[in-house]
Length: 82
Picture: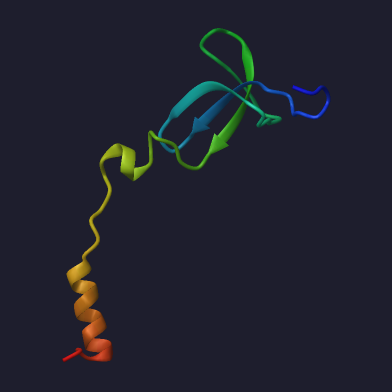
């Protein structure tokens, strides 16, 4: 890699506050906030809105859309094709 053109790549904790889930990884993301990790060291922490611990696809709580209801509503609104 060329020197002085890449952002610093360092350990960072990503935290999903909604699910109470956090993980330590390396990233170029930074933050002023810090957190003490399980190993006793202090790392910058980035709060995220959603992660694999809270996303409906990964947790199995995804909802199935009612497509039949949508079709009926469309036909009521615009009529049926016949």
